[in-house]
Image (cartoon, rainbow, N blue to C red; front, side, top):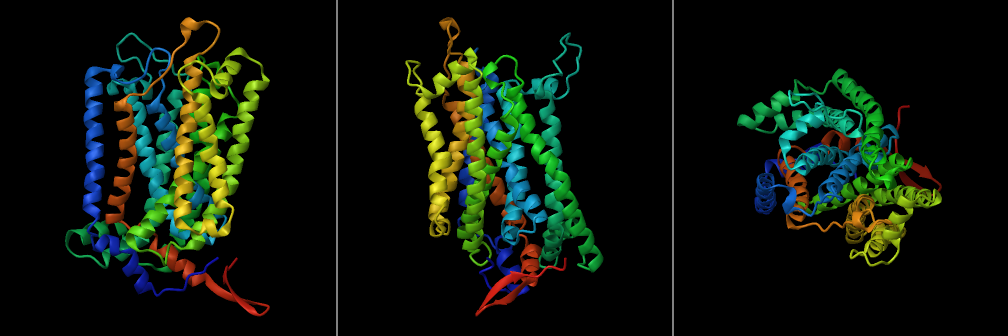
Length: 462
């Protein structure tokens, strides 16, 4: 580890602030294209609100489709911030440093995107008021406050608030650097955001303590958010095939799997786009690849347990869903083929690519593996939710299928464009690689003589 050379502070400031102080030629064309995709989806949402959910593939049986699948997917992506920043900060993993800011920011934007999906899914956004605030507003109808759907706003807003505080506290020293290197109205804004930061020992001590405390306090929220999302399904009375006690850890580990993979791919893109080869190095991608092998194996274990638990109970609902998922049939939708594809591209293909060290350090191979994981994790949520609602059981008049239509596909695609656009706009205003963290890592770096060789190590005062 720590294969890079120690860089002077002036060069670190110059390199990592270049994306803010200078605008690359490709920046605004890319942002414009992403913005057009988001605009097209916004118009589609307006048409859907005016016309109704009939323009989608949702029907009286399969009421949760692409939108709720996408909601759970983005909640999962948001877990990367806590995994890479909070947990690895407490574990004092040195290789976390270049990835923390991108992971934290991706967490915020993913949560914002996820919160939009249930609102779109309602088809009548104003009705979300009765979901978030279950009170009879003179309508004569009392919403049910017992389902876990009511828990989602509390959990997600708590997670979003704590993640935003986490990012802001870590940004304060970098705001001060930007304050000293800008003029005009940007200097006024950065001065306000820096909150009088001077870099004296007392301020550094308070900033470090606040970071460690937030890292510890955010961990229960990290676990609870996706557990509560899993209970949206596990505690749903109507769909018996979702009644699985393993859903909570299964969802949490799957969220870490997809979230860390997304951060790795984002880091590779940032390294290429902004020329940050001295800061996002092969050693960091290598370490994240080894972490992903462990996370992926844990996720695969819970996947197998979820399937075995469903079959072991010998309940008709569960057996019907497993038959639909794994056996070839005449139902018109080849769920068994998609299951094979999903398991292959989510676990076996990426783990094979991550095992050799040379492949983990090949950025093209790592990019392909991380994209494969996230395509597979999106499919996983889809194949977990839709077959259970299709109700392929003894009484054929209750059967139904779900075929998504173009408005759903466009809106889902636009969420990826939306998050990408927000990440790029953030990088234009704030540093995506934490300056103070890189400098701290260089200060703590030292060398040790082991036998005939000198190896890089980290000095710790504790």
